[in-house]
Image (cartoon, rainbow, N blue to C red; front, side, top):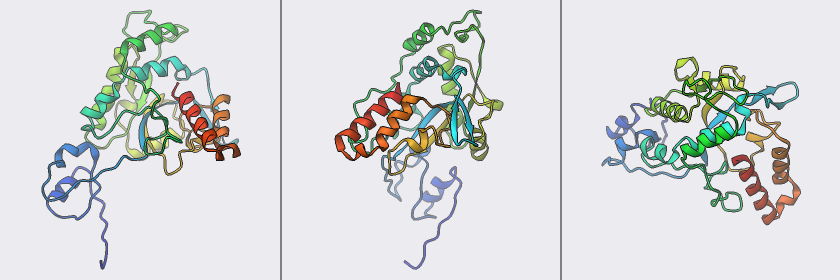
Length: 281
């Protein structure tokens, strides 16, 4: 090969470019899979990536001077029951099928299944779609609709509305964001898009990193790389811990993963499984 030419092509036109024979190799967007799965002039290959999409809940701030997360337990998003209920309100299997043509799968952990069972617990139960359970969790925790407007108040009887940040781009971005908000509304949680629209990629991450007060929840994604150690994304000292969540138990579990004891296979496996279970709950 004398040379390799790499072009940046708009995701909305890359499929047409490849069908026209203008390129030899292309990275095709998964949300357009239906438009090229039966193409005759090229073959499609895929792999299970070590990446996941997630809903993040803003629960504090980043202290740049100390270089650590400052968790704020007074925020409504810091109430575990609210987060669990919103997880049960969403049908991730339906999202995988309807929005991603069946080429994604519901996650059951924050370690991806391309890692071996020494790190990834394939038997951990994920959050299944159960809106009635979601409503019961809210009720048990004191989230009740006292004024009859269809949305619950917090356990102190105060109305709240969550600002949802989601990125623009691709054919599924807008309908998926609307789906999330609809599902949360059905269990009585009031959620609206920040500024009433999707955000451009750079603006989105700039505001997430700066802990914009308007953002309570957000949809983002992580590529976990070749090391499943969670400290760089979920540790107290991790700037990438965009949820700003930190607890002493989480510190302890991550320390176990990073300890010298973790050179032992069985100890390391238990340490990873314990962390996955705790964070999931």
